[in-house]
Image (cartoon, rainbow, N blue to C red):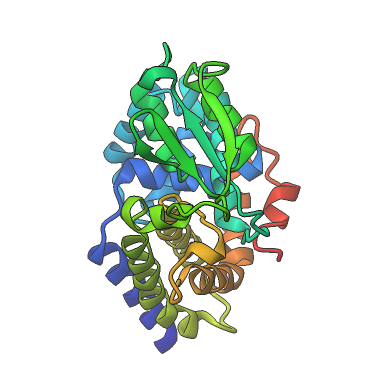
Length: 306
C-alpha cells in the first residue's frame, strides 16, 4: 500500500507540475490507446477515461467538439449517442508521428543533405505557412530565402507534406554533400545556427529527471489498471512532445551528451511496466464501441519491440 501511495503521489505531482492541456491529452489518448483498438470510442466512454486524469465531463466535451471542428476527429451519431474517431488524414499523420515515438531510429548516414529550393525565392502557389510549419515539424530548417535543408530526411514523410500543402512538383528537390576539393564551409556548420539542439537536449534531460524515479517505483509492481493507464498516457504525452520537436539528425551531428537515446530507453522501460494493466482497462472501456474490435492490433504489439 505504501508503494501505491507513492505512485499516486508521483501521478499527482506530474499533473500539477506540468498540467496537460485537455485537448492535447485527448489526442494523445486517441493515438496511443484508442487507434490500435479499432479507433472509435463513444463519447461517454472517453469521458470516463479522461476522468482518471481529473478532467471534467464539460472540458472533455469542449475538447472533442473543437478537435472535430478543426478536422482532427470525426463524429458518428447513433440515435442520441455519438462516437468519435481520428479523421482519415489525421490517422495517416499519426502513424508517422508515433513511429518516431515507439521506434528508435538511427540509420546510417550517407553524408548527403536534402535541399528544397523555391524557384526565385517564391514558394509556389500552395499553402506557404503550412509548408513551413510542416517542414519544421519534420526537422527541416530554412537556411536561406526559399531554401530548406535536412541532413537525413524521411522521403516518405516529405512526399506526404508536399502533397498535403499543395507543393507537389513545385519545389526543386536535390541532394547535396561537401566538396572536399574546395575550401568552403562544411554543411555541418549549419547545425549550431539553425537547429536548436541544446533546447531539445534539455527537454530530454528533464524527461529523464521526471520519469526515472517513477521507474523505480513501478518496476516489478502489479499496478492497478487505472493508475497504469494514467501513467502510460502521461508518459507518451510527455515523451511525444519532445520527440516531435527533435529533428532526428544523424548521430554524427548531435552533441556528445545527447540524451535522446537514454530518454527513449527510459520511456520503453516505463511503458512496458504499465502496458498490460492499461490494456485491461482499455479493453473493457472500448469493448462496446461501435467500430472497435476491443483487441490490440499488430502495431500495438510491436511498440518498443526493439
